Length: 266
Image (cartoon, rainbow, N blue to C red; front, side, top):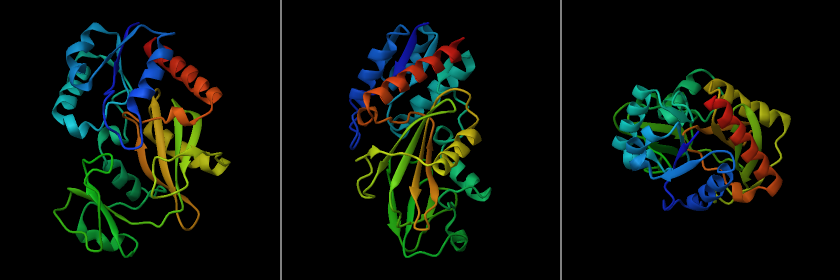
């Protein structure tokens, strides 16, 4: 079953090498599937010639929103299989999930989208404010007095967290975890050995997302109180930092991914 592998090999990601990761992954996936690579702007035009599309390191769709929306609509209309499936409830659907999870009482950084509701957040000296349709920290600012129209910005308390940690899953199977010991250096990651409580936390969001197949990255921060709080549920095109894990873990990830794709396609 031929796959169309969507990637932007030249995207200048800070602290990440999209091209290297996707070169590695496609080389290994060719052991299981015939595939071809394409830029996200070409995905809609090329996808009719393939059995499925796998979206990988394609960069923030904010930079090509119209083309992505058109690709998504065309794939849904044609019944084209897309991996990750287009039913994701996390970043794939925008940032509304942060508001929904906050309202439902999940362990997430408290989030609102209306400055008039600031009293609902913990009182802190500074707040993080970012566009509701943003990505990759684009447009992120910090201010003591958030302002602006309701519904356009996400507002969160600026938390003095100890570190960030990411949990990587294929389908519902945990693969590995990495953490950034220095909060100011998000992409300087080292292997992390999660506790049972850590994995229970991460699985909460994987289960909430209800994706039967796909790659998910659960990003969290360790709050001053010691608890983990969700930062982001990346289910569209999560960067995997595979170059930072041991070879045996990398091999196991590829095996899990190939198995997930086989199951998804049959």
